[in-house]
Image (cartoon, rainbow, N blue to C red; front, side, top):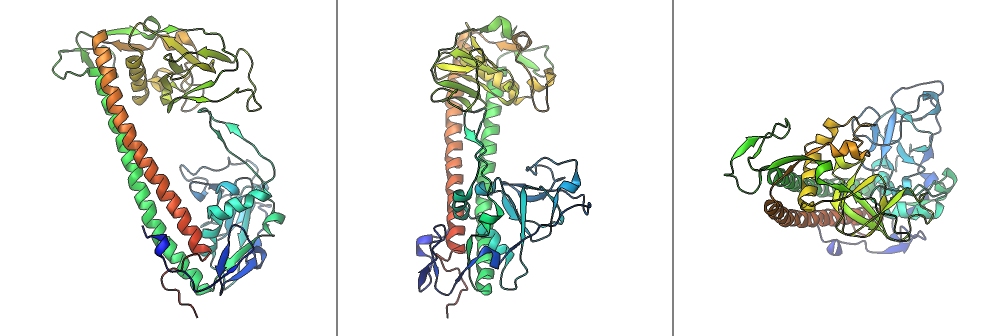
Length: 441
């Protein structure tokens, strides 16, 4: 990474009057967006194309048929769509504030809530202006125009999916910096090179995280199915997905090893969330305008209870609660005479091995429905002697803690790289740094 503090600056600057832009080089222009782009209002009626385009924050503009594309769901009525052309800037009017914008490589039909902008100016490089549209500073500058807010409560208790529509009339009031065309090309080439390097570094960190997660899964699986002594005599478990197990271990049904608790709701306590990320809490009363709950929707939970999510166990939503409060009735709140930490690791191992999805007739794709306690209770689990349960829990706590620290470090490094990329783009497209090759007159 280059030290942005030591990158050359332009000789002189002038104020743009736009908060998100700040000052720009003296030789740059500041022009309204309508001096560069026009809004394309071409309808797909009658139907001109059946190639539906999708738009997502993660992947930009993709063809709907592309796997993992994200974006809006396809409509049956193709005539309700609009048209986008290659090199159009496509933005989601509802989500542009959080980054749903990008340049299209395709000719196709786009959602009615999308805008398509195009330019025919010889002194405007679309690729340069795409960097501006993707600039977080520009996106934050749109907040003043946003109308309407939709906030959803995720399964982890996090508030997300903020939708604030920006109208075409508001967009037309925007001003953009306009460097000479030669500088636009140099800035674009500079950013493409640097962004590629940064994205490669981010990719390496993400692969490291995946390898660390895989290592954790292997450690957990080996420990809860084979124990900590490799030389221990083995026997056939009789369970197809399990294979051999230590000869002195027992197999028991979950309903004989766990006790389902029926705690009354604590009232006005913290809300405990059980997810594949563990156990967290949402501070305050969940009824404060976020979701509609009744007395029967929630139940009490104490610190140290074993929580198993009836719908998301397949995803690893199993944890020992670190908090006391209330949790949704979809979660099984359990106690056990056995080591609950060991049981939790074993149940998470079943998620790793996709056992829940195999033995369940899920109500929807990628979902295994174990809301019924009797159904969950028929799951077979391994029961080592208590001293081995304790030793395995202690061993796994130490190993997983080390791995989570390494993952956390890699995640922080990814955050720093993304912050650096955003800063680099912002400084380059607004002229706060002078990229190599620029010659001032």
